[in-house]
Image 1 (cartoon, one colour):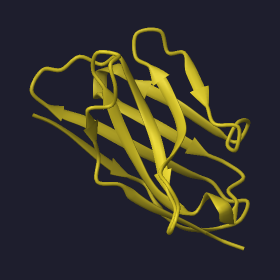
Image 2 (cartoon, helix red, strand yellow; image 1 turned 180 degrees about the vertical axis):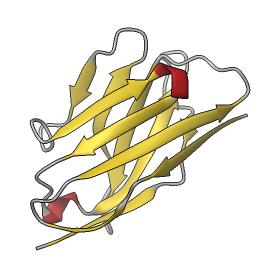
Image 3 (spheres, helix red, strand yellow; image 1 turned 135 degrees about the vertical axis):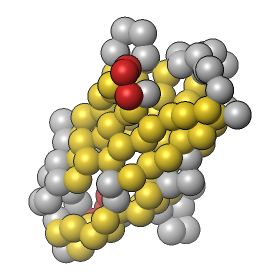
Length: 118
């Protein structure tokens, strides 16, 4: 079994920055890509960013492009989400997810709360 544990959330003011971390552990696993998703109260879960593990190529949702940066540390099995210029609409529970083979995100973390006050 693979476990994903997120950390780094918190309460910040608009314009501040946060860095989220997600560490994968457990049995030996493949990593095609890892992603960040978020879910605000009363809303559907939405894609935020993803990174292909082998190449480091990244993709972002339009709503965060230019403000958020996803990166990875191979040695630590960790993916990061650097969030700058935070806005109140970024308030959500942020989840990381692992797609081991390219067929879909099979593993999910419990999430970390990010709250941005105006």
